[in-house]
Image 1 (cartoon, rainbow, N blue to C red):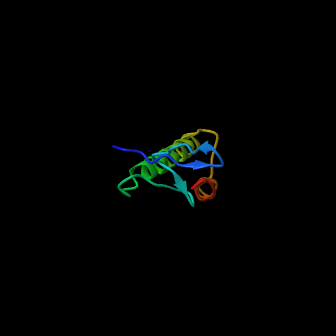
Image 2: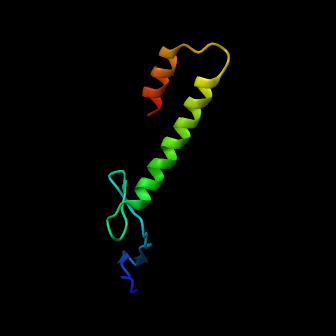
Length: 73
């Protein structure tokens, strides 16, 4: 694989194999695998928080869990 070396004002620009453009992580084949991996990780962390909230024994109301779900996701 050959890389294109680009310079701007004498400084070589760094190559990024997965650049982020308008919030979307791009890859070479435009399969969005890296972007989907990042989104899945974020959703999983939100789900973990919601699971802990829903399973707590201190009397969470269903409305609180619903509002929290909308706020986090």
